[in-house]
Image (cartoon, rainbow, N blue to C red):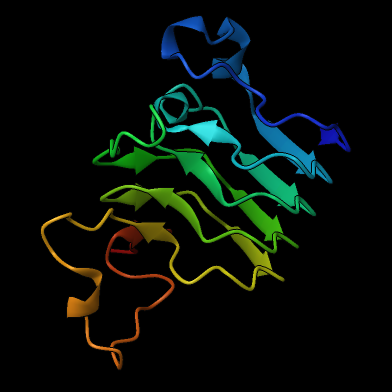
Length: 158
């Protein structure tokens, strides 16, 4: 658990320099880290295949949980998978706008999802809008859902 540390990032941005122990992580808990804007980069997600619990609480600056590799370059993953994630908890994150930027998010093993006091969270995942399409082209009365077909949280029962 990380608690009350004053860092802006936890991991190196480069995929090649991630410590080998990252692939064995089963639980990540982050609490009261007020300077942290994001937790993971998109390239780290594939290294977290063993992750069972992701809990983030009371991080005032957290805007996104998983950011695209090379922030600001418009890159994103086509598919993000957390194969063993059982618990996802996002609590008291006043600046959180989305979980990630991706075409698809899969969490087939998810059993517990807790979202609370995240007033800026409007959509769970986001696809960057095209520079060719003006932002004003979307009608004002169009409301997007927090979860849509880009988010697969539970395995479908046959």
